[in-house]
Amino acid sequence: MTLPTRSPDFMISERLASEIARAATRVIDARSVVALTGAGLSVESGIPPFRGPGGLWTKYGEPPLDGYQRFLRDPKQAWQDRLSPREPWARALAETLGTAKPNAGHHALVELEALGRCDAVITQNIDDLHRQAGARELIEIHGNHKLLRCLGCVARFAPGELAIDPEALPPRCPRCGSVVKVDIVHFGEPIPADVLRRCHAVVERADCMLVVGTSATVYPAAEFPLEVLRRGGSVIEVNPEPSEISDLAELSLRGPGGAVLARLVELVSRARAGSVQ
Ligand code: APR
Image (tube, rainbow, N blue to C red; front, side, top):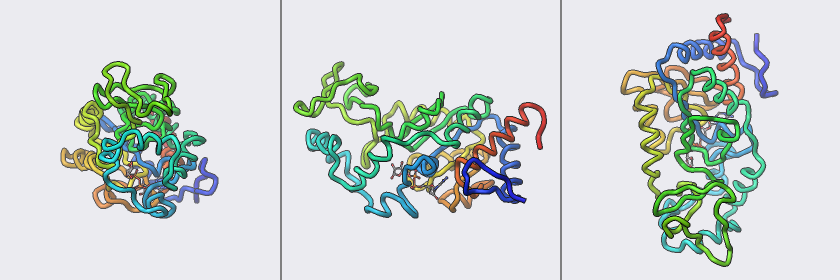
């Protein structure tokens, strides 16, 4: 017996259905659930992952790991590259980011939050899709491609809040005069302290972490599920393929994020409404 899903080409097997039911029980019984998401969650929105089959780094090679130092050395050039990307991976990513919409997985996490069963979403994605889906307690640990951030006072600027004049690059902060960059955290750049503080605050309280669509290879984000496990909590992975956290996860739900999370939330919602299948 298989269950239809909103991902037309993915059917939930009986085995996966029973694992999702176990995960739903875990989520219902948890004191505090936090979700950690990665590029895999946005694959069903048409944005390629970075690693593995169809990954941007797989296709174009990993970018230099000193992106931030390059920005600091020549912010004007870095901004010119941002306004008209030269790197093929940057062009490919920009194209998909411009048109992508949240999928069933993003919406399921918003629903889980509304059910009081998800206290925060920490995302490694810079694609703004959790925000567009309506996530409330959202922490974008690698920044957001639509926002700008001042390197001095760490002020953030929403689209349209700060005019970018291609003749006067790099843009300067209207508050402190420092250089402003896109909010995306480049390779080699420290995670802004305020963001990291928020991550630690929610991770410290969590006794259950949903790890969705990430290879769990990039730190400090990959440390968070380990922290939950060290404190005796549980990790539930959602990923069609094994990742660095698979061996430590209590449950690995092998399917696409959209389909699996939608099913998980359906069960949690039913349980909340008093009738568990
Ligand atoms: N649903 C869920 N997971 C999926 C799906 C899907 N539909 N499709 C692929 N995946 C999984 C892959 O199996 C892989 O384990 O998503 C994962 C994507 O891994 P990465 O491409 O490594 O992405 P991520 O873990 O988010 O990368 C972390 O690395 O390059 C940096 O800054 C970048 O934030 C990024 C960070």
